[in-house]
Image (cartoon, rainbow, N blue to C red; front, side, top):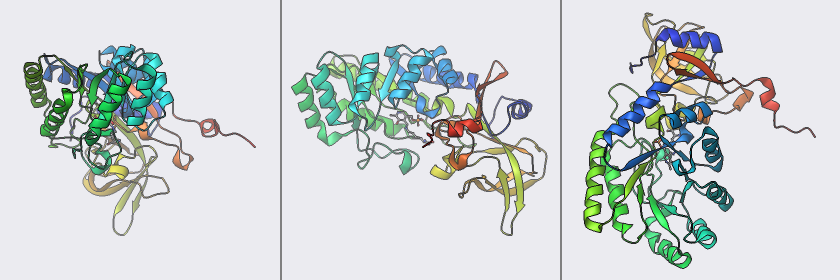
Length: 404
Ligand code: LLP
């Protein structure tokens, strides 16, 4: 079992008080993760921007700000959320893809850091702002990386970033419009175990750094892998921190100027800090398997179905029950299997099942499919559990519908 320092009684109390299904986040675990990064990269001129697409509850964003972390956004609405949470513009980064130029203009007006991922938007930016506003370029380094193809974003067929082989075109635009390029960005994927992938990214960007005299930042995106089950391989951030330090020193020696690194971790900061509690509605002994049918489904927690992701599940209502095998499934009119042939302490109707690693891309990817309500969210801080989002109610389903 993945260790957690939250007592199972607290999870049960939360389920009883706020109902199920419910997402639960542990503030201090987020801080612990951030501190791990700070200590691994100490003395290396590195800044971290939390990729808030992983989890945008405003209370979590405020907490992220409070612990001193910066924020990375993938839509102009996330930028607005970051501003609302109190982040200063210089601590906000906007890395988008395939967006309308108007979003970039809004971000510029707010004074935040911007990475642009297409030649056409780069041109528009140059024509409008020229040298007056520093900007970053998102490149596609043609590196295959990440846990699976769906979350792999830097390979040669990926839609993300400007293909590296078009660097001449980029330079033409930069020259033509007198752009001030201060950052080069790549994000090759999520769940990158191998430090060598980051090293390869550094190599690619250092190779072209000479063409950018205003360069201040190499931004390697997110993608640090965390453990989803005991024994899982994770990104060795200590090793990466060391590598980054060495590369920075080498760069300075070779090019006679200083730069810094930025990273945009999402999962690393919030995945393990989050839990998802569901209640078992039905135990169905079918001929081939026993189904444990919970009061949730792919509408609330899609990672297992969409990515084939493995999440530890624990029956916190019957911790000493005999071990049996179940298919843990949802209540949606689709095949929404959370876990197949999974060993659990005997599951009875009404039992609470606790899902681990639900902080990143859990609630954030939830929907109202089958006209079900989105779950509530609770934050545990200083040992106290507080509601930070109410469960939907019936009116929410109709809120934006217009009668004709
Ligand atoms: N920076 C950029 C530009 C990104 O596109 C992403 C994630 C990150 C940072 C953060 O990556 P992380 O550190 O969280 O791996 N929904 C999928 C993950 C999609 C990631 C999208 N981009 C999942 O649940 O596995």
